[in-house]
Image (cartoon, rainbow over all chains, first blue to last red; front, side, top):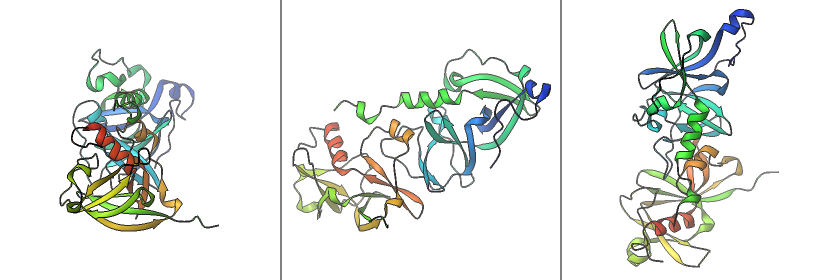
Length: 168
Length: 133
């Protein structure tokens, strides 16, 4: 568990204004962060129940304190292959608009503070993960790609064909 | 007041366990006793291994019967309303089937509750020449 501090942070004053807080995951060999306020908790991934006719980015559902949560595999969504699921795998439970999903990762770094002046526009590419980046920042551990997670989740939903809209 | 339990039929397709409302099922039979044109298999639940049992389902829309081929029928389980969960909204929005009616927590593990009439309708719609009604 952790305390989400949001974009404003709690440091206050000039230092708080100079830094932005994000939640950072290790994915696909890189460091990816998104708005910290979206994350409610980080938990170990329990036994996964696979769903029929699910898109590849939805490997299944699991229960967390009696609530059934869908698991989102960002690697599959961006066409870079499935993120391996191991006994130690942890997921970040996030709220993106109406959707609550568990984002699977290779590892969880947790909250990171990025100097606002270090954040640059994303690369011009529009394929793969680059399509969902809102910026690129740096901290003392290196480069952090900043994901527009709500847009990514909404794109996942839009790309899937809901059952009611199939021909038949 | 205690919530009255619901009855779910538990069955297996391949290595996976599923549940369905008992009310959707007319009877359980042996697939060898059923004409081939009434058998439904190769659904989104996955491939069968043994093809031992058939769950006979009635389609309320047209009164037709079909037999879903499964590997095992494990019996009926009583569950309380508290053990039933809806499909999460994100999953419901992206699944390409309407045959998941919800989930039941069995030892804290979610097990799919399958809407059998919808499953069979979808299978027939996907392969009308193989599965005539």
